Amino acid sequence: MLIAAVTIYLCITVAIGLWAARRVHSAADYLVAGRSLPLYMNVATVFATWFGAETVLSISATFARDGLGGIPGDPFGASVCLVLAALLFARLFYRMNLLTIGDFYKHRYGRTVEVMTGLAISLSYLGWTSAQMTALGLVIHVLSGGSVELSGAIVMGAAVVLVYTLFGGMWSVAFTDLLQTVVILIGLSLVAWLVSESAGGIGYVIAHASAAGKFNFFPAMGDSKAWWAMAAAFITFAFGSIPQQDVFQRMTSAKDEKTAVRGTLLGAAIYFVFAFVPIFIAYAALVSDPALAKLFDAEDAREIQRILPDVVLGKMPVWAQVLFFGALLSAILSTASGTLLAPTAMFTENVIRPFTPKLSEKRFLMLLRCVLVVFSLCALLFALNSTSTMYEMVQNAYKVTLVAAFVPLLAGAYWKRATTQGALCSIVAGIGSWLAAEFFAPGSLVPAQLIGLGFAAVFMLVGSLAPQWLRAQGKPVPTV
Image 1 (cartoon, rainbow, N blue to C red):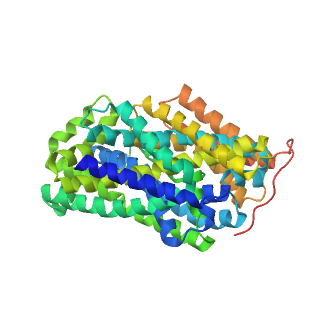
Image 2 (image 1 turned 60 degrees about the vertical axis):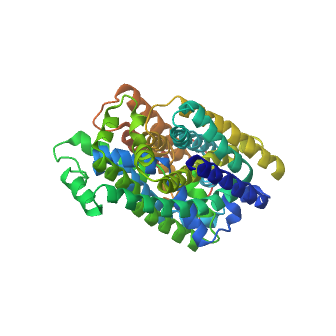
Image 3 (image 1 turned 90 degrees about the vertical axis):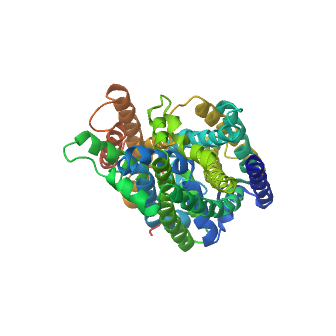
């Protein structure tokens, strides 16, 4: 019954995605749903895309092992990212009528900066998209009782997401996100209630976590390295995920700028609150079955992500299994579709199109879909060859945009003296110093991405205020 229910749910999701594809008539329809989503759909797309596999499987398991101190990036940094994006950039992006976030860099700094940031942002999605494919494969592998190898299951999961995203773009993402948000909220809430009963009740689980020190967020005062690591994890999510196409798409898909701001803020609030539901479920499962802690010592870091699937399959009635895996699949599919579409949009519009400016609308849509297939294959190869947890894969993805794209975005929006030369210096210095630190000093006190962020900020200032050897391009942005 469980496998049949999951199969039916996947078929319904694909059918809705293909039905939504009828609304796609232009690149704007494909990438930002024609900028017409009402508030409830905008909130659903923000929440469902952010609430992914790493939230349900990886972050929850990391909390069970390390407590709040192990997850400063998500949900804390991730939620702050959405709030900052809504307050600082939503109105600006909406008024500029952009198709991708890469168009901001083109408008503000010119074609060269557009291509460089477009390439960096697109490549950053490999880790995030791969994390969702890995999660979908893990679900199929677990549901099959191990009869389907994990690698084969990952391939199968990637194919499902590719099909409905390929044809419908953002319209398919929006309609499937709406369904998936409802399933997530209802399914995980009921599963949390059921697990808490088997673990002795909500109060007992919380008291147990408190006694075990799981609510200790900050490191010991004298542990400088731990403080730097916590700051790096938080900043990587909070700042590094702002210059991402998926965040941009959800904000600018709204019907107006007020909806864009409100939808993103509401989505952030719901995400932050509800992210603690799978965290509670994972810890309650550990309380009810301490033997699950053996997964923490596995050589493959991905093994800890099996806590929730294993306990649901082993100890819960079929109806609860259907609800849990329905919610889990919803979380994975909603995020996976968004993380496939976002880099496709960036790479096609801001890396390829500058060299082929005369493409017709029909040919551009065809090119978008071709790039989507190619990127899916690249992410699939990454997923098949990585042994990192989903939380680690997502965090590593945001390091790229933190050092390469955040400073030019912030300076371009709020510093009138930012120049093309400054942006180029910032990108080169940020990426170069980050890679150098990762390679030559991987165990340094200050994490490599913070070194890259510092260099990016300094060289933006120096490059913009120094004599301008490079001709300024672009133009000022509208005031907000």
